[in-house]
Image (cartoon, rainbow, N blue to C red):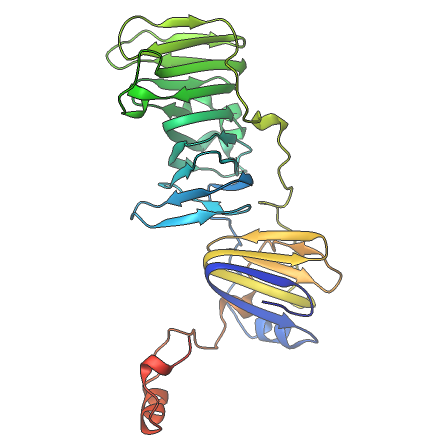
Length: 327
């Protein structure tokens, strides 16, 4: 979708768009007595550096394709196909690289940048290869961050580590070389196994292998990986950033009710997920306002799926049925 200010890329989306010029938008907002609602990002993470095909399946079983800037929410299972990879950038600056044929679930993510110590990050590595760098929640309270697999749990201490989960770790049959391999390249991790109270602590430069059966095997050399370390990946600065913006600003405003919107203006791109508002100015700048503009929040124009009995009656008398109504 093209406007004079920006291009809107649409991916299975329900959204509002408004081009503001003159004073009509600010005048509409001024007539609303309610306070503006914060433009909070609902997503736990957004994906970047996508190569190949990556998908997310929500708790209701609905599957969607993820492209750069796509949102990931609590309960989502993110899956890469063969030869694909991507990096999950979380709101607390945690970074997760997902390798080929990997399944990763966000079990719980709660984060407030004003109180990171009360945040929570729990995730499950269901299959494949993961390279993780923990963020601000872990720095504030590392006991509130944890990763789990079918054969072990991983606690962190301000950490960068790698996981390879195959065979029994992924709930699949495998040869004796299959299992769970862990390697720490920054900080330390604590590894616990079901039925055991003792924790195995791995410092930077240490690793271990948990096979389908038999004792744990120390790993002394870093396992080879073609996936980028998450601390060496460039992540767009505006994935979650926000900026004070007046409702009278001139340009394109967009509010996303569902799906994924990409606003492109000049060389700048802003990705918006469910419940987010964005703006593209006449100067080519794209930003996420701190508050949702009131003229969008309280828009009086009916939504496309709204029912209007009087209009339906008029259309019916003209021979136009519901199936012919544009949405």
